[in-house]
Length: 258
Image (cartoon, rainbow, N blue to C red):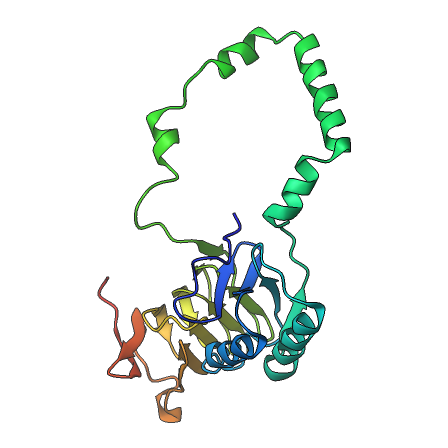
C-alpha cells in the first residue's frame, strides 16, 4: 500500500523509504526546491554507493511540483548518486478520483452491477459470502513484531547482487567473494559470508549482520564500513557470528542469540 508523503517528514523536506515496489523518495511538495535539494544531499550523504544503479520513485503524495523542479531533482539524484527516477506505478488519490468518477467507469460499473443482479449465485458461493472471517483471519495482519523479509534459497556467486530495501534479507546458502547482499534492515546468512553485506542500507544503524561464518570482503551497517584484517582470512573458527554497531564502529562477536 502506498504511503502518502504527508506527515512523514520529521523536520526534513524528504524521506527515503523502501516499499514493495522499490525505493521511494517522499518529497514535501510544499517545501522550496532549495530546501528539497538540501534535504536530499543530507539524506543521501551517508549512504555510500550501495544504492548506485538502482531506480527510485519520486513520491510527492497529492502535492504538485513544477516540471523544472522535477527536472532539477532528477538531475541531482542521477548525477550525484547514480539513481534513476522512474514513473510512479501507483496512481495518486487525485488520479484515482478522476478515474473513479469518469463517465466511462460509471457506465462500466452500471453494466457490471446489472450482470451481478441477473446472475444466479451458486449455493457454494452463497455459503462463502455469508461466512464471517475467523479470528485468525482478522488478526493475522495486525501481529506485533512483524517485519518485511525477503527469503533467498540459493547461494550467490561472484557478480550477483541481492537488494531488498523494504526490510530484512535471510539467505539460505553462501555469499561468495564478489557477491553482494544489501538490505534496508538486517542481513542473515545461513551459510558462509565471504562477499559484501550491507545492513541498514537506508541509514538504520540498529541493523545487524548474522552469518554462520563471517569472512567477508566488506561489512557495512548504515553509513559505517569495515574490512577484516587480511591475516584473519582462513583462520576464523566456523561458528555463528554477528556484526553490529558498538561505540560508533562495527563490532563482530560470537552469536549466542538475540
